[in-house]
Structure formats: C-alpha cells, structure tokens
Image (cartoon, rainbow, N blue to C red; front, side, top):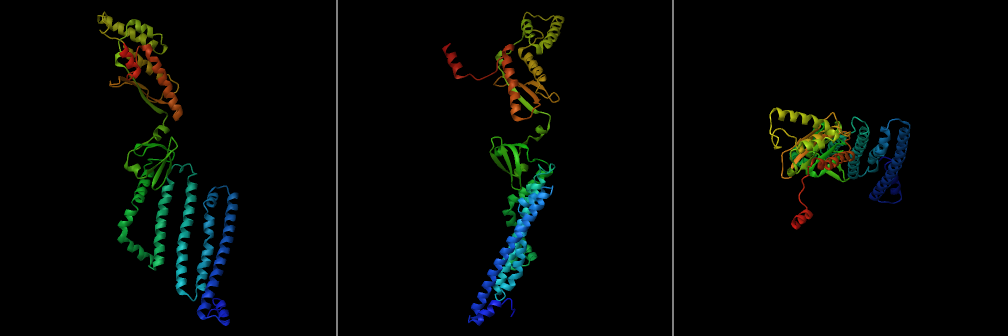
Length: 418
C-alpha cells in the first residue's frame, strides 16, 4: 500500500482499530486536511491576485483593468489553483473508496464548468462596460450580444455537466438532444425571438440607447436606457420605467424621434379654430384701420392698390361689398400669422414655414401653423409654442375674429336670462 495514502491507517491498525474503521478514519482525516489546504491556498491566491491586479490597475492609464477588478475577474480566476489542487489530491484522499472518489471528482468537474462560466461572464461584463465607454459603441445594444453569447455558454456548460454526471460522451449527449429540439425551441422561444430582433434592430439602426421613442401599445414615451436580449427599457418623462419586449420593435409600430433630434428644429403643428360667424369681408375703412399693424402694413397697401385697380378696370359695382375682389379678415389674419412666424426669432428659417387653412369642421375653420423651432429641448419648445399662440389669440380681436369654443354653463345661463 502507498505509505502516504495510508499513513494514518497503518497507525490506527497498530493501536487496535478494525480495518474498516481505520480506513474511514484515514479518509476523514485526509479529507479535512484537503479542505484546510484548499481553503488556505484559495485565501492566499485570492488576496495576492486581487492585490496585484488592483496595483496594476492603479498604475495603468486604461480603465479596462479597473473594470476587470470591479467585475471580480481576478477573484474568480484565483479559484482555479485550489480547484486544480483538489482535483489532484482527490485520488489520494479517497484511495480506498472508489465510489466516493468518482462522486467527488464529478462534483469538482461540474464546479470547474461553473467556475469557467463565472470567469467568462465576469470577463464579458468587463468587456461590455468597456465598450460602453467608447463613443462609437455607446448607443449600440452591446448587452444583447453579451447575453446571446452567455446563453450559448450556459447551454454548453449545462450539457457538459449532464454529460459528466451521466458518464455519457459529450458528442453523443449533444446528438441525443436532437430528439427534444422542438421542446428546447418552445422553451427558449422568447430568447430566440429576442436574439433575432436584437440583430435586426442593430443592423437596421432602428433604436439606440438615448433615443426618444413613443410606443403607444406599451404606454412608453421617453428615452431608451437599456437594450438587451429580451427587453428594451424606456425611462418615461414622468421617470417611470416601461419594459418592452425586444421583438416588439420589429413586429409593432413605434415612433423614434431621433430624426427630429438630429435635425435643425422641432416641428410646431398646431391650429387655431376660428368661429365661422366672425368671418367677413373688409371695407376700405377696415383695411385702413389695420394698416396701423406694422407687420402687414405694406402687404395691405399693395393689396388695396391691386384690388382697387382691378375693381375699377372691371367696373365692379362696389355698392355691395360682396362684388369684385375683396380682402377678408381671416385672410388678412392668416397673412399676419405667416409674417409673424417668419419674423419670430425662435423659428428655424431654413425649414418649412407655413400657415394654412384646413377644411372646416364642426369646431370652426382651423388655421394651422406648420414650422420648426430652433430649440429642440422640450421645456424651451413648449415655451416657444405657448408664446406664439398667446400672441395670436390676443391678436384675434384686432381682426374682429373669434376663437371657436363650446358654450359654457355660464354663457347658457346668460342666454336663458336674456
């Protein structure tokens, strides 16, 4: 018998222990000694390796090594040495107990697979954090790619562990999985859909981290803060978080505001509903009165001359205002709106500027402003729009126009009293 493996066994036999009891006692003592050795080696290795990495990271200019330390890569790698020692000494400890030896070996081999996956995961997390610091990859769905790789790694690790436990060769075990491939596809359906969606989202550049998206189906309206294999996280403007399945980005319709953000302005598209009963032709006296409005004084002067010349040459009977060419208060106000917008300092003059009359509705005739503000920031944009329409609503009475609004309770009571 090997002297080292049975050093305690021989002593116990000499002092009267039975053979079986001496063997079990010998194994127990060696096993405790192995645990102590592994624990001490693990502790020392971990301290030395982590300290060495931390020292190197503090001296290095790159932040990659700092991320390795923060993601515990050295700590996980340090477990490799005690694991190798345990694998090497296990046959010695369980020399007389082959069943125990096989059981412990399989357990250590499975742990080795798990440890390898931990090391791979922490390394990939380090790589992910590092890539996110690069400007060219900051808005790319790096999380999705890392997760896809880790899913395959975990599947491979799981199959390897099963193969070790069952003593089935790995290739034979993988071949046998073909029979249950349909079940695997069903179980990992969302993962597969998310994987395909992540690739399409990335290739087609549909969504980036930081994009403002609106997804009405899921109640999302805010900035994309995370894109991973299964979900996309959107931080809404009320600071709530909406989680959207990644595959929904290619199966459903959503709005990405990146084009607006990258353009020279943010669109203003809002209308004033003019009460139809307030619209009328303008007399010469009305026109002369409106000439005091500086923005449209020259326009009115030219229009009045052209209209008078036309009506005179055509011998139009102007005893009735309807005859011939005439200016209307809504037409002059529309021109005022156009001129006002064109001269507004917050409007981008290089983009479309238009005031248009839309089809009449039950709420009056809409006069819509279609333009773009220079400032795309939400708060400033809302201030600009409000400022414009505050002015235009206040200007309506000068043109003898009214905004349409449904009658309130007070107006109905007043009519009833009259």
